[in-house]
Length: 420
Image 1 (cartoon, helix red, strand yellow):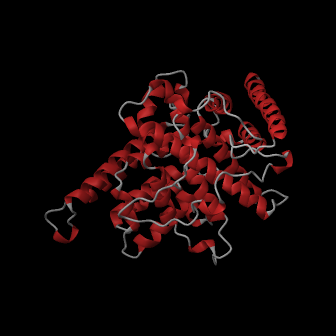
Image 2: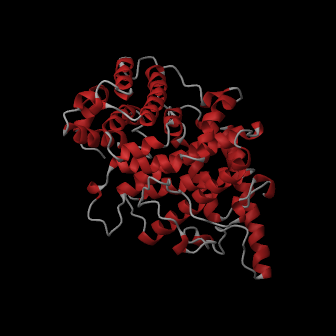
Image 3: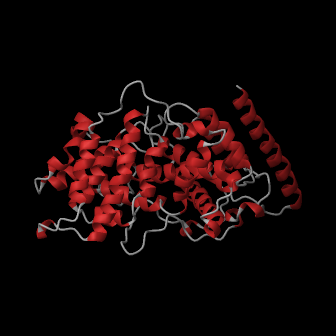
């Protein structure tokens, strides 16, 4: 109840700010530039006066993967909202649409981060307060709330008009870009020396950016553009690799921040609750052992010989996968820490997976077990099942299904069901 009252007070205070700011704007008859979402009329909540033109929005729904250079998840925006924290006011001025999205966060979207049902009050209240003094975090909150609304509007009994969906999509892109650029500006000058007092805000921001990447690819796969013939031609492997490339870069500091957060007052965010029963059998150690054997440089068999650099990429990916699966065997749920594998694997692993290299696909198939245990989240869905089915078809051509039998058994009969 206290958390709800605190959030109510926050929203009320900003509503008063908006009211008096609007009165001043009406007197001066000058357009507002302090917020791209500030509107002159309350009924324009889905028609914000954006500071960028529609033609400048980046396309996130049509990934174009390049091996030579990872695709950038952001457009090149020049906006004061992406400057570092020192250039921002202590309090953010919110428009009507911002308040709508913030209310959505407090009501439901925050649950996208509290995967095991715990820590909901932290994401609903404490993280919002952090965002009020850290614009990149607030932008990420608004972006995820907008994406949550966009994803669910097609599932509501009353369909949202297409033009409103388009404006909502623009809000996702706008806030996402600002959140990502704000993070880049803060950490790029000194990656090795992150300010400890910003650990909570940065940790929350990185987690939300990861969820945004998965949520956007999920939404785009469920809502193909009218020009596409069918969503069935999409490759789950390509979608996954595109998502991995989006979360690489600045969000990789999440791995460094975990230890800082674990020592503070919000340690419960990174300390999972031990499960009363195992999420999966501990036979994963045998599967990891088999993967290590395949990733070794085989000098005796020229046909099975791996390049040493490729072997190193596989070995590093397997090491991280082993830790991830070990965490899953005793945790109640994989949680967002289960996604840290994406930030720790070598960048070259994505290229090998896109090339459909058998060992890379085999490793990825085992990671699908982690994605499978996140399937209840709207931003993940059955992506793990879809990837495993696609890998099964590819490896089945070469009679390599035995290499991923452990992953198939761990997911059981769901691989035979229709992936949603």
